Length: 124
Image 1: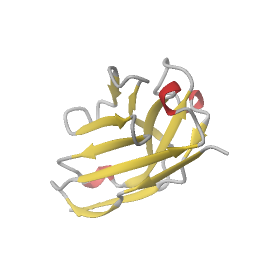
Image 2: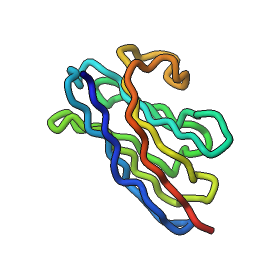
Image 3: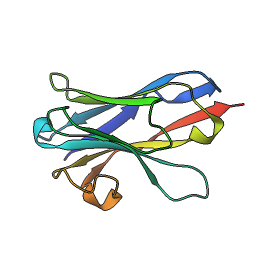
Image 4: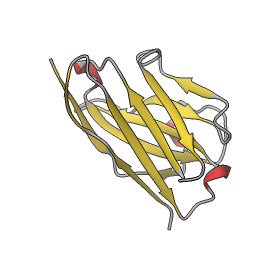
């Protein structure tokens, strides 16, 4: 059974940084594009960032562009999200997801596998 396990969440002050990681197992990691989504209380899940199989293409939500960076480590089957200049509105549960396709990556229904999520809280 495919597993995606997120880590690295926590509490940080506004302006600070966090690095989220997602470890993938039981899937051929190099065959999957990877994405990060987030869901704040009372709000719908929203796209944050995605990276293709090779790591050569990335997509970001406008709200995080210039502050967040997605990357992948093929040797360790992990995808990371470096989050800088965090804002209180970044507070959410962050989810890692895997997609067998590269296209419409902002659409959560493109992703076949999901992690359980990690909480990120940014205090003002």
